Image (tube, rainbow, N blue to C red; front, side):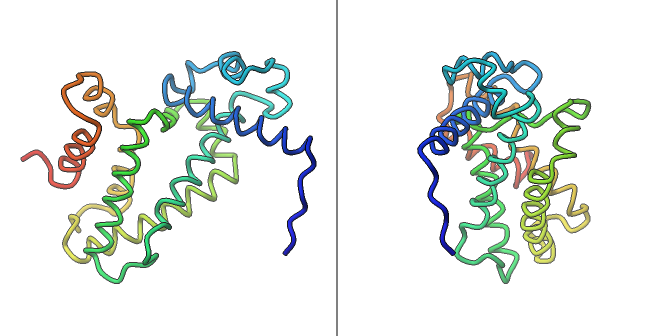
Amino acid sequence: MVTAKLSFKQQVLRTREEAIVTAANRLLAEKGFDLMTVDEVAAEVGIAKASLYKHFASKEALAAAAMVRLMDRALTQVRSHPVSEPADGKLALTFIKASVKWALQLQLAGEMPSLPSQNSTLRAALLMHPPYLERLVALSEVLGGWIVLAQQAGLLRPSLPAELILYTFFAKACDPVVSVMKASANYTDDEIVALLLETCFDGVC
């Protein structure tokens, strides 16, 4: 299949749109959706707010684009393993730990957008945004399958609902403990990740 070559104008628009989403992603990670403003995003990119609105009709649409990008990165990560469907629970658990580790590292790098709160207008927008929902379902199916395999092998507690374990792992992507430990300056990023993985999978008692 031959892909049509983009015109110079289309390339400029795409580059600008990527810059806008990148700026929004950083501000969502730093401030969260409620405190982020469209003015801040436009200022960081170096364009007028009116120009930004030519790409994204609202703050919610802009944040949704950043969340879709996050889902794409997460799907790339989970699909990067040489065996997409592990045959045993031990390998599945290894893949799960690698995914949680990736999410923690992304948060430490300031590249993980904060998940929207239950009553956020962004959450409502995401629930009506097919590209985001499609990716979320795909990611949940992969991780959910790994969780079931690990439970069957007795490596994750089989008495817990698989969806509860899945949501617990998703929550690690915005775990506030990460920023608290980072701010203390007592640990390196690698040490923070190692400690949080240990408490996540081995507990504290």
